[in-house]
Length: 310
Image (spheres, rainbow, N blue to C red):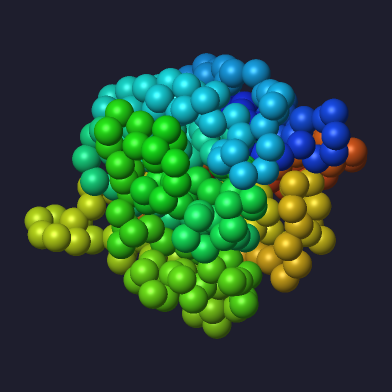
């Protein structure tokens, strides 16, 4: 069995400030889950912390492109180094964020190794780019990382090490997008499969997620991938149970549904690593949302690793 290795990526570089003079609190996610014993409960190895550069918006204006771009561009290869080393060693990295821009580190790492896919379990697609949005709305890598990973976006982020794109469109899958999301039409044109909350419920969460994993083909041929990365954004949950995120979207997944989805994906031998993002302890005064998220992740790993505990 592969060892789970927990790596902290406490970066908030990809989010706009929640209010003037403040910074997003999601950089505290990793510490919050560690405080709840996630390393011990998973029987995991400790992969340490990849410390991000300073969060700094000085001088940035809408229309300037992605803010903190230089810092994200510097951080991404460092995180990729840590992830790549663990995957090449036959281990399973569990990366605790941070905002969704940390997914760029995983995508770059996997692009160095071979051809890999992405299954994003997320309320939104994080697919904002100049082809579908005005220039003034571009600026937060945490809402654009899948677009950047597929080669859409400024080259100082989308073409690190000359490896653009890190992901092919046909190797990306979305689960948990809200019904009626404006990105769905573009995905249909691009041939990027997506399962909305409503579709997931009609098909059954476990069966639908298993089918998504199986759809990322293996073996020889044009559709072959070597595996996939699992991206879990806490905002895929309904805000009634997970209010501690930067942007709440109603009509999300319930805990039991998300548990079935993640268990089914982790059960696939094609899943090579996972990240968890966006939970913000500053928005969770009683700690209940953090308890829920930690329990969900630990419980889901029972499908992957028989010695995960409670």
